[in-house]
Image 1 (cartoon, rainbow, N blue to C red):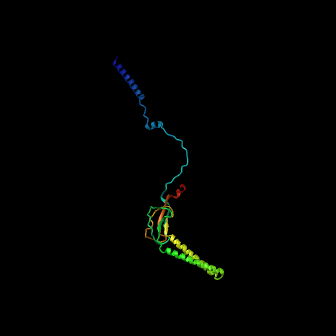
Image 2 (cartoon, rainbow, N blue to C red):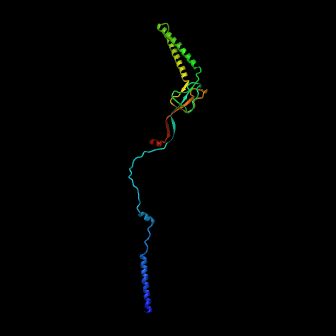
Image 3 (cartoon, one colour):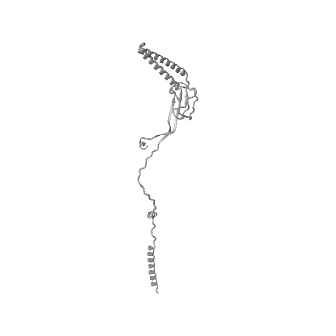
Length: 217
């Protein structure tokens, strides 16, 4: 074979090989990769479903407050005098009618005895005046005056008895002492406290709410 023909054959073979390799490279090119976000969108997601029904829920508010005794009374002295009873201490349990403070009677028993004697005398004078008036031996005005004196004597006796009754200051209800009772020997005047009694059964809760929250209470 001639050299020229051999060279031509080699050139043709090289061209064919180049064309084959070029076409094969395009066909074997890898497919573009799928973005992670797109892959995630294509993947199904598991969910939990439930049937819901609309309904009204009760409203609620938060209140700030404090607890208080259900009943609280500060027992005051109604007559003047020195305390002659031993004091009860705060926290002591008391029942209705128990003695809290006792005041020295002083001259009050003597005043009561005198008022009763004057009542007896006024009653006798009224009886005599009434009898004389009925018989016509005395004016009716004398009988009326005797009657007025009798009523005044009765009022004096009631006042003296009340003064003595007020010497004993007692608990108004069952409960506990919130404060110490008045000390032995202390001088009490009308309106001054002897002790404070509280009832803790039940307990009272006092709360504070704004005007906008009142409708929710």
